[in-house]
Amino acid sequence: MHDRPSGQEDIAPTAPGCPLPIPYTATEVSRTFADLLETFDYAAELYDLGVGRLNFLKRAKIKKHLTAISIALWHIALEKSFPKDSDAFFAHFIATYPPISEAGKKARKLRDMVVQYDTLASEKKDADFTQVADALVRVLNSHQDENRRQQLKISLRIRAAYDLIFEKLI
Image 1 (tube, rainbow, N blue to C red):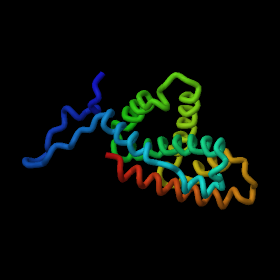
Image 2 (tube, rainbow, N blue to C red):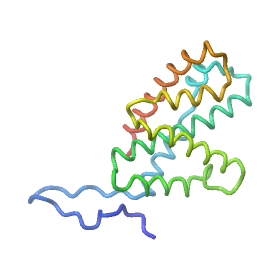
Image 3 (cartoon, rainbow, N blue to C red):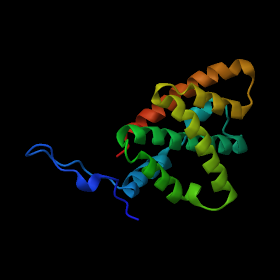
Image 4 (cartoon, helix red, strand yellow):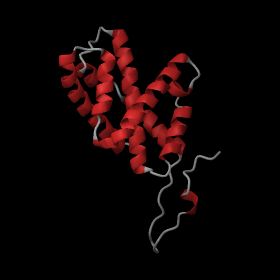
């Protein structure tokens, strides 16, 4: 199997002097996102959710959810930038990114979270992230009166993360 995006081989300029589109491979796009994903520390999100520095187990749990959300956001950005190849690029990433692609229980759990958040995010795409934020806030099982405030803060953080992912896509 080759890594070239579908249809990129047959593209010709429409007018003399027009440059050809730059073809990106699934490997290149996945590597770019994996590098970006490794830079995320989620400190602001953890703070907004009220997860303290000494709560190691809850921090680790929420970081996994935030990683899954970031991957789902990347899928939306891919759909916008590479409409024909987004599913192939996303599938390649899921199949090759070690924290997801390995056979262990942790990788399977992260894959399941990615599917869950990808499904939620795909409903409204980049128009509204409140459902995604609500799902994350529910993971915390926090008090009902805090949920709405946290949901709004996290929704705004998710929007900012999406904007960054979209900006750094290639």
